[in-house]
Length: 116
Ligand SMILES: Nc1ncnc2c1ncn2[C@@H]1O[C@H](COP(=O)(O)OP(=O)(O)OP(=O)(O)O)[C@@H](O)[C@H]1O
Ligand SMILES: [Mg+2]
Image (tube, rainbow, N blue to C red; front, side):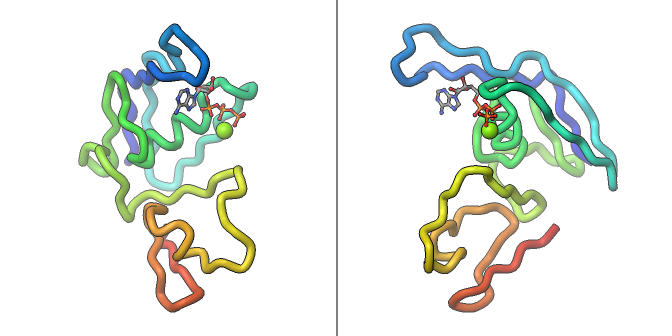
């Protein structure tokens, strides 16, 4: 069970920007076991920010996120994230280039297992 309550995220350090940027504001929803959620919106509306926050990779400015009745404050093996951007170097083992991806671990020199 994922529970998002009153989630807000403000970036205070936007590159080349003077004013703080409010990206998420008072966002609340619950997701049960086997539920799916598609997040859609124009570029820059905060989709990646939301996913990074749920994955425990970004701290919210307001609100809280609970996964299976535990506060999400850091990455855990219960969450995994596949990024849209290319972040891996060709020819490099996945686990070597992204040891921080939550839910994933290297099981051999060139393979990584991810738990759902
Ligand atoms: N670390 C950061 N510091 C400052 N501003 C940021 C940071 N990360 C994202 N932003 C800003 O927050 C807003 C939301 O960005 P985000 O990447 O979440 O959007 P998105 O919906 O995923 O966009 P896209 O569809 O292009 O992937 C953008 O205006 C972006 O410039
Ligand atoms: Mg994005």
